[in-house]
Image 1 (cartoon, helix red, strand yellow):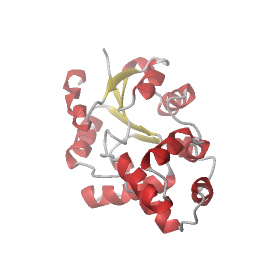
Image 2: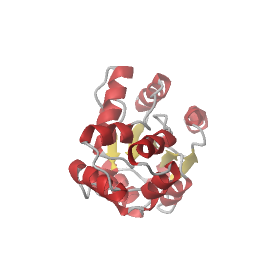
Image 3: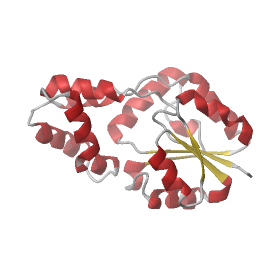
Length: 205
């Protein structure tokens, strides 16, 4: 396998996530059980639209209030939405930098503006850097591309924009459906079953 490009997901790969924290926080704010919140996130078109950048931050917050029949303010929604974002271990960032010296490094994440603003705050606290551009050659977010994983078009667009050959790229993600999407366009994949598994990349370098 001739790999010259490493493509990393963010959540559960670079940054630790605790999605249950988010559901618990919205549960306390809305009175709905956490499992109801979780099902809404996965089944409501609102969250997918937001990840695709088809609605902006204000529209997203309004849709959340409508979905749960509440009147939460901007700060309440953002805090509850961001509480799933946990630590960014410095060792993972150092791995990106080490790879970047010899290979092309790409970030590809399903995410949204509110999360990225918070992510960048955490990143600056950990590394002193303001954004992921310091650690990768290319950074692609679903809400900026107006498409999301596992749709085939996002992988094809990332390959096109980064001038990458699919057969020479390795994509790392914690979700199998996202890996399957990448596989379908010829990208090699590596399932991150727990975040520190990214350090098992030695066999590819």
